[in-house]
Image (cartoon, rainbow, N blue to C red; front, side, top):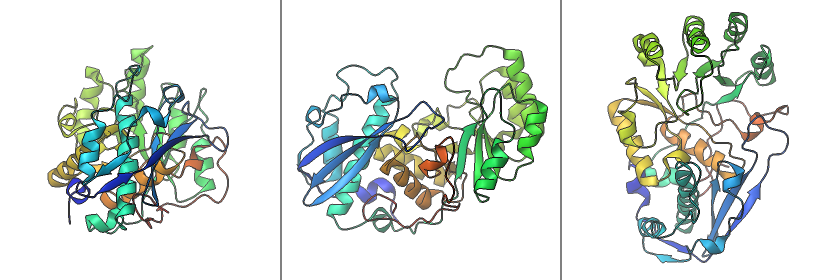
Length: 348
């Protein structure tokens, strides 16, 4: 059984053409990320696809001609080294992390194409059998909070779990109603995004209510306030980090040393670093789960396939995209998700 990078780096790849296409959701969604862009790389009768996530403004005007990627390379590693010579941002992005999102678009598309040109799939080259993927549906309760939203979603699909964005407006009554619904797996504090805290006292009171009410869930991305760290340090085994995790080194730099992390491939950006993270976490006994970034196309299936290979039983925030609609339709896929892979680097 190979590590990810060793398994794929020597695959040859030929790219004859490339193009971008915008994707839009099938209906109203709850998040600001209302569109994504897919990159298609073509060569030798095959096509590899990657998905650019992030704010729509960063995707406007993407033209394939601005990214000279056609050619023939003896190894995927050589093509990825070629990407280092391309200026992917003539105008610097607003957030530096956007560089990783775009890099992953090209690396994931190239991996997909290289595997297809080799007539194989990611599970085959890794020597791993994909397993059914447990997933959760991630959302907030709105403002003012809708205390019945979680129960409504659970009734819609009784197998699905939840990753919920808590807010100071959650009263104890709201928390009790949410906690009474089976399947709540992660409470996300959104404390690592640099968002302004308007009322620190109200925030700390929210933490106290949350910790007392949700006694068996993961607490993701807590704020760095000393009072918060003091409250959560005794239950560090239930604390995880998401936003800061981009490299192996970032795991050791979190304010609370944790044994659970959210490894998002598109945030890591590079296959070689993603491979390092997987290997480090597996050897150190650090539990992993992953999450999406509003993918509407192939990127969601790629994240699902990686979860099926590396952490299938975790609370993976990679529910099929229609779960993110304001009113999800009936008949959505249940959890765990069928992991059957397509050829290349996709899930059917």
